[in-house]
Length: 396
View (cartoon, rainbow, N blue to C red):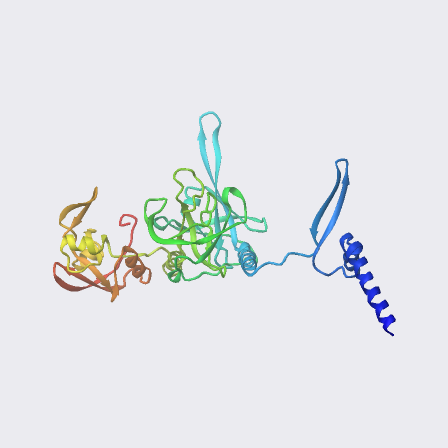
């Protein structure tokens, strides 16, 4: 009995030795398992023979698995791409030797409803004599310009096409610095390109026409020529902005600083067109200077925050309501400013600390609405009722 047990142990040890020494290193068992169970995941080896010798390469036997972040990137792209279009604007220039020569500019846009309305930048289609839109499925359509808002660099186009997929518009009032964003467009004519980044800042900047873009979304997502007019998306694939321009220091390509118009500005533009047939942006008709504690202390102001009225536009809403502009010239560094005017600290009970706060209030009203403006005139606190006027290109 004991001899049988000894022989059994010796047999098992010998078998284990043969298995680990000769069969496992050579891949005999592994190859047998792969042939018996081809659906099992893992890596395999493929051999290629040629004039330069034999090449043994490791190849994956299964499709890659995406992590949660990669899968979300893929979902955002697939969900939004059918709504993003390529916009081509054709103009005719006269050449001394060749006569009339067509010239094309390219940008991006996105579909906002099934009736074929498309939002893009005004500078994408400006002066275009023929506007053409190419969908993600490569079908091309002639586009009509419904209306433009030069001050905000916005344009609304329309095409006649079936089975369109509109985007979902978010509320850009709730965006925050640090959140993840995506840009989809046609940089340098490379259709359907997606880039990713974060919101780097929210600030007022000067647009392509020189007009201010309030609450512009600054992002490090790569934006290049051809991205203009395309959507800036949140992680759910909803549009929070319209990619408009880049800060490139003259290199004409992305330097990690791009700017987008908040989608709420575009929604107000479209709402005005739907209600009135034209743009009716509300305005206070003032030129203001933001005030902080240091400036307030130097000027002896009654509050250490607010916006100082440098100038009221003649015949505008502020002048009609009795707001006063500055009467004395001073300098902030090398910049001349007018001081001595009213200090606006609240509008409709909302604290006003920057010019962006004023813009937020304007975006929530229409021309003709009346707001209560709280000011300091010297040390005296006053409340004035101001009926907002309709902004014009001159006023902007």
